[in-house]
Image 1: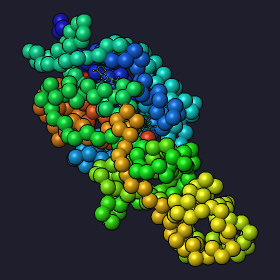
Image 2: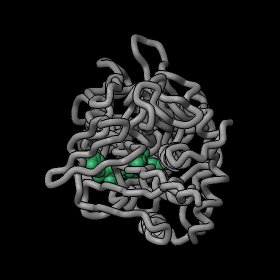
Image 3: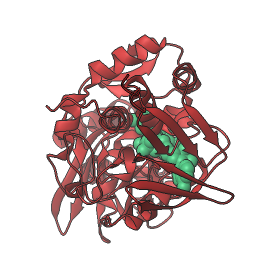
Image 4: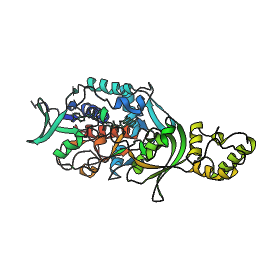
Length: 412
Ligand SMILES: Cc1cc2nc3c(=O)[nH]c(=O)nc-3n(C[C@H](O)[C@H](O)[C@H](O)COP(=O)(O)OP(=O)(O)OC[C@H]3O[C@@H](n4cnc5c(N)ncnc54)[C@H](O)[C@@H]3O)c2cc1C
């Protein structure tokens, strides 16, 4: 009689988005899976994503929305496990989703906790051994298997998946342990920077606009050259600028000192058209003051700030103000702020940079340095745009790493 084949023992370090998906994939492919999570609860960051709504994917999740040293790396992974496949898996787990503006996908429940819950249920149903409140402090190779060190014990595994995330969102679990653990096994890390993050600006102009939101066209300029552009919502804050459109340009804006953020507050109008609009206001309402010049076009506080930041008094009557209108129209089309930095990893949604992807096989996410070792999610040098792309990377890379670690990979 032949002896029954022993199941492959797969250890997953990190019970966030990519780690839970990796554990599910490995267990579905017949591995014996143990998941180690530092925090008491699985998916703590996931439960806070999308302002508690979890923008879990995007219809347009293509390689062009991702960044990193090796631009092509993510395309193979996204081909092997694409957005539709991930959503089908979630549907199978019982999660219904809806699509919103710009292809952003959310759970139908509108609640990020539902995504964590269906993943937890699947881990349980598949018999994954979950160890939460259990930080892994060290890893080494020992006679062909992996030795995982924890404060109070050691565990061994045939295959190891590192899914510890990055440094972003520190309070939610972004502690950067994954870089250290992978370095212990011979890997190297690129420079790490916060991405999808709020910008600090010089001066105190934005303080007076705290809470104001507006649609704008944004240009990031350095030494007179435009290095990034975006259109969308901008929020003014005590320290500077926030909002989805600012997140989108933050990687470029904060990359070097001296960047200028230029906001076009009237993206639908040419400067001359705006000037004519202001002129009509002056002619039709000469009794008003400059404080009301922009009333009805942008938020009142923003309109007044445009006037005062030009060194003009809001009490100046509109009658006879014609000569001031062209510079004010130009200012509204090019409202500038000098970038002083960003709010750092704690406030960032994602880490730009990470463990060098050229050290991994993009077909399987297996290490080229240490056979049997896999990595997925944010710990790798791949980060996506704002809009559900980062979680899609977590699902795709998690699935590929888990399936490959279990030994059932299909090569694309
Ligand atoms: C506030 C916020 C909102 C976001 N909103 C969105 C959004 O709406 N859509 C989107 O696409 N992306 C969003 N993101 C980004 C997205 O959450 C991440 O890209 C994604 O969670 C990365 O998945 P991951 O599995 O690599 O890492 P994580 O989800 O961070 O999981 C890593 C896990 O590893 C654990 N861990 C770390 N070290 C150890 C250790 N030594 N031992 C054991 N466990 C360890 C951590 O505790 C953590 O649970 C948001 C991020 C933040 C911070």
